[in-house]
Amino acid sequence: MPKSGGVVSCAACGLPTRVPAGDVVAALREVNILTVPAGENTVRFLPPLIISEDEIRLAVANFETVLDKMATQQVQEQDGQ
Image (cartoon, rainbow, N blue to C red):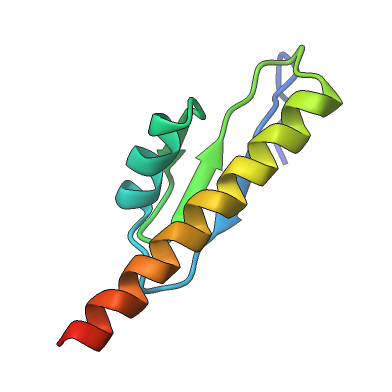
C-alpha cells in the first residue's frame, strides 16, 4: 500500500441498493452535511480534520434522519402504484 504524504480523514457508507447515492448527497446537503457519491450506492463523507465528537454525532443523527425520510417516501411511492 502506498504511503500518504498527509493525514486523510474520510469515511464511506454503503447504502441500500434502491437508494441512489446522488439523491442521498442532495438530501444531506439540505441539512448542511457535505458528502460526495462514491459509486451507485455509496456516500463518502469528507469531514474536516478538526471535527468534534459532537459534530460527528450530529452528522450521524442527521444521516439517519435523511435515510429514514427517504425510505418512508419510497414506501409511500410503492403503495401509491
